[in-house]
Amino acid sequence: PRVKQDVQERIRYLKKERNALILAHNYQVDEVQDSADFVGDSFGLSRQAAAADKDVIVFCGVNFMAETAAILAPEKTVLLPEIMAGCPLADMITAEDLREAKIQYPEAAVVCYVNSTAEVKAESDICCTSSNAVKVVNSLPQEEVLFVPDGNLAHWVSLNSRKKIIPWKGFCPTHHKITLDDIDRVREARPGAPVAVHPECHPDLVAKADFVGSTGAILDYARKSAAPEMIIGTEMGILHRLELDNPGKKFYLLSSRLVCPNMKYTTLEKVLNSLEKMETVIRVPEEIRNKAKVALERMLAIG
Ligand code: 13P
Image 1 (cartoon, rainbow, N blue to C red):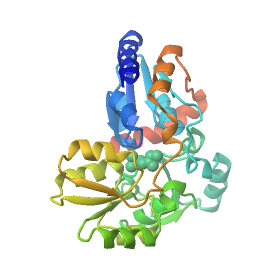
Image 2 (cartoon, helix red, strand yellow):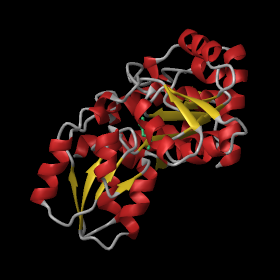
Image 3 (cartoon, protein in one colour):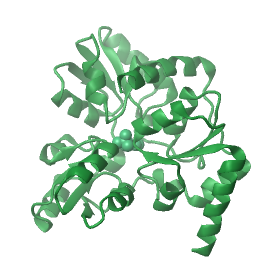
């Protein structure tokens, strides 16, 4: 603990020295969340990055999140503490794949989930996160929407919109491996406890849940719920905030497999190292950045 305390102190000191803001996703490990100025879901983090008034943003999350910050705040230095922190879902579609799909569906609007590369964002009309996907899709004048890369989120949107959704076949390997058996087993063990899941889960699972929403929406739902215990179907990092926000309530994971290895790459020591060495700077080529920024700013305007 003494060593950890030293690391936290050193981070606090360097944060001032570098005039840095630390942003952390809800899936980060507890102590990284505790070192951050703001912890949130993808939408909240994009907003914070766009509005940041510091010189440096240390992004504790995965690559596409730091890229999004670099697109929205080009005058800032955006650091990703662990360059290996990627997103397999984001890598399930390339810009070339999307260009081909656009030829196949020339009438469709292109909505890309923020879990995508900057190149894919640059080929899209508008971005969305899981907190605003339905709102974004419903805001479009087109009746057809090519929704990439998450097929599960696309399905959930299709249940909540009259638009014709053409889904891409991507999925988040962490959420996708949760099964109906998991939900049946946990419901039996904790009868009456509501089940809150992320829309990246398989549609069969989503159909059986009591609440579906982004990590931020799950946190809101838990705060407002009178239930003394709740079952959570998203990455385990969220338990930290759930427990801090709701003393006395109990939260159980739908499955012990709900661990995103990429989100766990970032440790407190790596946050410190990142501030010490100013590594790794995330940059997006200007031509791609300009196009991707339009898609992200359209999303931010919708809220
Ligand atoms: P949200 O925090 O926006 O729900 O996103 C979850 C996620 O998959 C991040 O990679």
